[in-house]
Image (tube, rainbow, N blue to C red):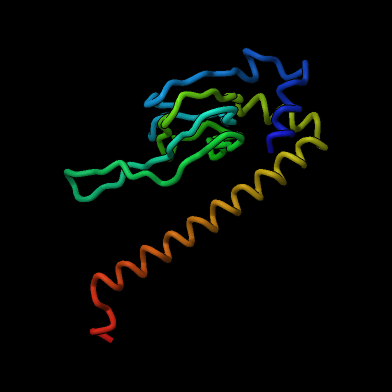
Length: 157
């Protein structure tokens, strides 16, 4: 994905300031907040970030649970890529670093005009999303197994 995004942002037709911008961040800085409107894709050039979600424990209590960490060359924010949607997670900087924020609508227009790059981009994004889905499935299975052990389910079978 890195090579594809570098090719896109280096193209003079994909204007810095309008289609994309580089942002440096500091440790503990919130990059995006769950529930805020979104419309950008982010590419990490340097640094480490933590993705977390607010999880309701009961009607009055929530916890902010870390889901996973992102590092150099990772992308995030793809759920709100081609249309503005509500952010489904928060992202917090664990270190200082730098990222490229890409406007989803501008990227969509660019990829429509450059279908060869668009194909490469979406193929790469599909691979990333498939890997994330596989990791999420493994976590769900681990949590399910943990829950069964905690509740001593063998005793009830």
